[in-house]
Length: 349
Figure 1 (cartoon, helix red, strand yellow):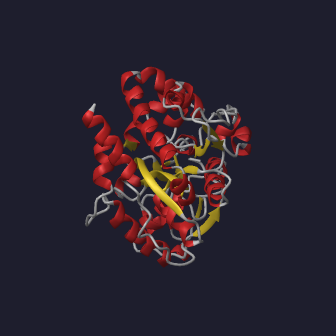
Figure 2 (cartoon, helix red, strand yellow):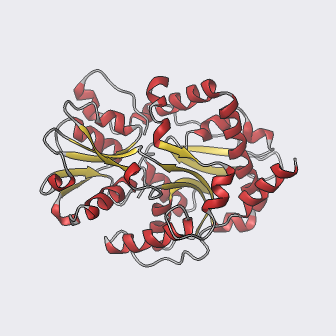
C-alpha cells in the first residue's frame, strides 16, 4: 500500500517536457534541511521523525515552522525523504525513531521482522491515490496487457491490485513496470507506459499528459489506505513521554491549521512544491482524522473503519499477492493510550 515513495512527492511543474521526464521527485527540488535541534529541552535527544510527500503528512512542516514542538518542550529532528520507501527502510533500520507511513506498509515491514507500533492516525486517503491512464483506456479490464507503472510493494501498487482484483484481473495480466513514484509519474507523462498508480501531488504531474484521466482512486476503496504515525516499539517502551508529546503536538497543529488556514496551506504547498491553488485541490482527497476519529478507529469493528479489522484484511491481501514475506504478528500493532491520554486532557481542560 502506501509506500508513498513519496508521499513520498511534491511537484514543481517544469515548462519543458524533457525536464519533466528527467524529474524523479519534484519535492527533491526543495531543501531537505528541515530538521530541528538535536538536543531536547527536557535533557534527552531529539525524536527523529521521518516524513515524505503526502497531504496528510505536510502538517508536520507546519508544526516545525510554527514552533509547536518547542511549545511542548519537545525537540524533533524532522527528516524529509524524497522517496517514501526510503523513509520506511530507514525506520526499519533503526536510523530514525518514527515515521509517517501507511498501514499496509507497516504490516509489510513487520512481515520482514520490523517491530513497530501505530500510535496515531493522521488521515485516510479518500481520492488522492489514483490510477491514471492514457486516452483509449476506459475500464479496468482495458489494463490487460498494458504497461502499468507504480512503486513496487508501495501504497499505490496496493491500490492498483485492489482495483484489478475487483475487476477480475490477476497481477500477471498486466505488464508491471516497477518505478519510484516520481519516476513512474514522469514515465507516464513521457508516454513510456500506458497507466500509472501514484499519490498526490504526483497525481497532478501525471495528469499533465494530454488525454490522460483518472481510472479509479482510493475513493472507491474507503478505509483501504490509512496513514499513521509509527514508532519503533523500543522507542515507545523507553520514551513514552516523548511519544505523548508527539501526539499532543499533532493535535495542536491541527488546531493551528483550523485557526490559520491560509498560513498553514501556504506552508504545506511550499513543502509540496506546488502552488497554493493546486494544493487546495487535494483537500477533498485526504480526510484528516480528529481526536474522535482516532478513538473510534482504534476500536474493534467489522469493517475497514476499524484499524484492527483493516489490518487483518490487509494482511490476508498482502499474503495473497506476495507482498508479505510471512504472516506478521499484528496483535500488538496498535497502541491507543497516547490518543486516549490527549482526549482525557482536553476533556479536563
